[in-house]
Amino acid sequence: MAIDDSRTMRRWLASAIATDARLELAGAAASAQEARAIIKATNPHVLTLDIDMPHMNGLDFLGHLMRLRPMPVVMFAAGFSTNKAFEERALELGASVCLPKPVMASKTDMVHLCDTLVDTVERSGRHRRKDPIAALDQVDSLVLVGASTGGVAAIETFVQQLPANGPPVVIAQHMPQSFLSSFVRRLDRLVPQNVSFAEDGMRLSAGDIRIAPSSGYQTCMTWHSRAWHLQFTPNRYENVFCPSVDILFASAVPWADKVGAVLLTGLGRDGAKGMLDLRRNGARTLGQSEDSCVVYGMPGAALAMNASEDEMPIEEIGTAIIARLDRARGQDAGR
Image (tube, rainbow, N blue to C red; front, side, top):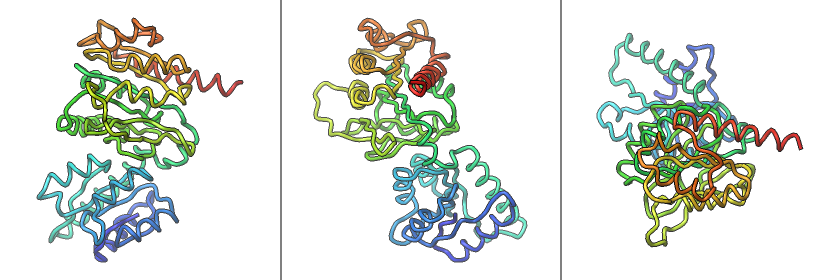
């Protein structure tokens, strides 16, 4: 589906998509309002989206889309060639790829750009989940992760072990917001999953990785309508990290049998109590082994409280938590 307020560009995009037999144009819209109706009617696998549109710009629309109906999006705008902040913001919100619009391009340039667009759209649709709503019917598990000192490298190693269309993952990493923003962008480039910041009310799908922001709100979980949703609560607690691993873990206790919880390297005890509550209610729980931690505080505290079932090296823990969740789901299905 193509979304652009320029009739010329909509026609150009339609002709570009028509050049490849693998693709079919689901529809074209000139505004966010038109786009919503077409998305609802056709359930497209991939969108191309302009930034400059009437009433609601493309970045705002992208933010709403990724909260309510996440799907692969190719941002297509003239501003990407002159303003890298547009591109960074689009990728942060969840766009798959950002491409510049042609400006006074030659015929050869136009043909090359058409080929690039078609290949990029097809690749985005193949690597990102094609039907996020259907995937929710198959995956109701959730992975929660807590980390602090040394957590950046540990998380990068951890997420690369996860299946591209596996259970959604929510990560609380103690880090200032400015550093978290660049971390989110780096993770999204590193793995095929859809990596972005957690947002209040966001519905999670298979293949989502969400990073809890370190703003004035705590990130929590809730399960309803056959899906996991993020829920923000004001951070009214004194001497509590934001994001707090304990608060994140504790919020999922009512649905603990669906949850895998992991504590990675970090100073202090944040997450140990929340993990204990999860384990007592049926969650799978793992900690990073001492010899692979930069600081063994958080996983060590969890082990001392009998909150973690086991400890493993960072190179194994991602694969292990998915395997344990799969076994738990299989046991439930056999009952």
